[in-house]
Image 1 (spheres, helix red, strand yellow):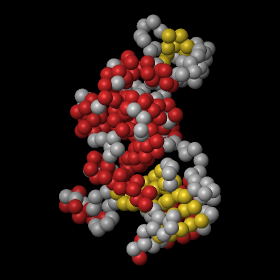
Image 2 (cartoon, rainbow, N blue to C red):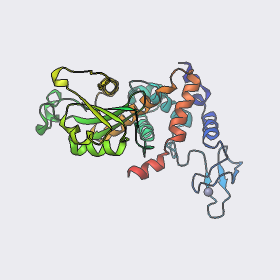
Image 3 (cartoon, rainbow, N blue to C red):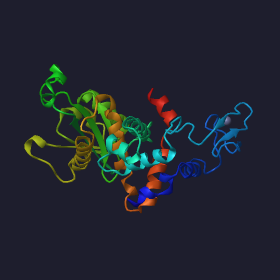
Length: 312
Ligand SMILES: [Zn+2]
């Protein structure tokens, strides 16, 4: 619990200065016009700046353009919420967040979705894999069975295994994950994702599902494992890494979030992807880890505004 006593989680002013030092390492940046080192600090309020660019002249603080913008919740609580989400392997519920931060459940729920939104990769940095790299692709179903729901809440078209949402994940062995909420599991939905996200020189590992048949031909190598014939590993051909990722995802969604609506699934996937992809930050001490994680979501990741534009 030592990380939680970090001053940036206790004090709004320290949180602001921390954010300034990370986002403005090369000088104060105007959140409106983007000009650097061309603003005057206002005496009226610490953290308030006026842009000196002729065509701008706006007043701003470090939160303009970030996911913390226009919020009545103190910045230290925002940083703590982001840290807790980043560091809880199975996720953290809005109820827990509401109690830990001493804010309403509604505020906690809202903050968590904003943080998840910031965790989404707006645009992936390029294809995964490459020559000599192994990518595992697999899909899973998320959500409760219709027969377990209250009669009044059942969707009559969805009896049986239906009523679940499909998640599709690509994992590079020893590397990162990218997962997607897909409307159905077919070559038509998965093929374009494989083509767009994977380097053609990669080796692709999948199960024997027909949805991979055509797409698989585009890669240097495509090995399939015949799960229905009880085959799980053949040489380096297996999808155990992806299955490991899905088991963390499912334990989190079932154990912490209980239910995830179709509308929000992509955000939960982003949350679990983010933690998996930042796992390299493990092994450093709590303070350093919290800073790395926060930098990850505040700095190199998107700001709230760019997120909105991209996914509008
Ligand atoms: Zn400006």
